[in-house]
Amino acid sequence: MNNYTEYIQTHKTRFIDELLELLRIPSVSTDPAFKEHVFKAAEFIKGQLDKIGADKAQVCQTDGYPIVYAEKIIDPELPTVLVYGHYDVQPADPLELWDSPPFEPVIKNDKIYARGACDDKGQMYMHLKAFETMIQTDNLPCNVKFMIEGEEEAGSESLATFVKNNKERLAADVILISDTSMLGNETPSITMGLRGLSYMEVEVTGPNRDLHSGMYGGAVANPINVLCQMIASLTDENHHITIPGFYDDVEDAPEAEREGMRKAPFDLELYKKKLDIAEVQGEKGYSTLERTSIRPTLDVNGIWGGYTGEGAKTVIASKAYAKISMRLVPNQDWYKISELFQKHFEAIAPPSVKVKVTRHHGGQPVVTPIDSVAFKAASAAFKDTFGKEPIPLRGGGSIPIVSMFKSELGLDSVLLGFGLDSDAIHSPNEHYGIFNYMKGIETIPLFYNHYAKLMREELVS
Image (cartoon, rainbow, N blue to C red):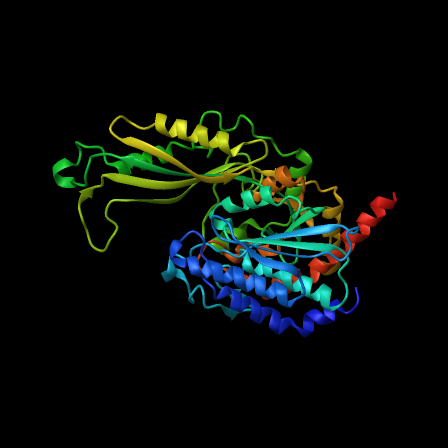
């Protein structure tokens, strides 16, 4: 590909500076206090697409936050790649655990520290810069469409409606997404599957008001104690989830896939050291890599109730709350799992409390074919830039819209992620390596090149 690597190196500083500008926008979609900033981020993306030569760039309004759409159709006979990403970010809390302000990006040790640096502003913005590179060096071999949303961290509710109403406009041959991670900078991998998600909130109510723990303790059920006992009962001593019917539809990973995972480079001691833990924990009979990718899980994401301020206040709280997520594997349906959870949680509540279960959002698990033209093109692109074949692995996270794209548009997605598990996404001090950012910009044009070539060969054959 003519001069494209030279162009990337020449404009490296600007590529980084533009990302830093985007990271300064606190586009937190789950907190209404940041509403104006989410809209500002959408306008920023639209403006950048205009500058780099995309056509029909527009901020498409929805019932929630807008979706930025743009395209470049160079020849209707050529294949079309639909690029998906998101410009919204997770809340930065707890702020006191950040070493630097989350929306004042800093570069330390060749890493960019900011909320959204990796998830997903840094990875999404790679595609804009890769597109610019192909345009400016006359190396664009495919048609391109961009669909960048602002509600991914809040469940992508508006995106589903947008996709249903714009199927013709979004017509493509494959969807390209960078919102996942790889094993390491020395060991590239491509995500070939994602877990699904069921996200619930529970409320346990005891007495009709907070009570003095000296006057009522021992006589009235404490909702916080009860909630903790209920949560503890959701898994057994082997860390097996105890919800009746939970595993009925679980599709076990093929033995060949498990064997491949056993061969993947993984240093358990280094893993524990980086997390500052003495030992790992998880479902009996499975390795750490298997537990975080091919097996379902249940985790408490937040729990609160009673008095949590400075000093002491001796009360029995009236209410206790928890947010609970379940990661799901192929064949598990998130609607069914949500119903099973609600039925079970209500059933295990003692008569001394009342329980309310609320379903927040979720998504279906997905496995993408590794024998497709698009996956082969991605693998070839990684081999070109990393010098070795990438390992196909399932990711532990969830991108619910991947299964929706398949059902609504009939398209498979290629998950071309350049993040690392150590990037602290969703946590304080999130960061993204400059190496990874620039390597993504270098690899993406090669994906287009290989994809166009393989598609031509397939048509001829």
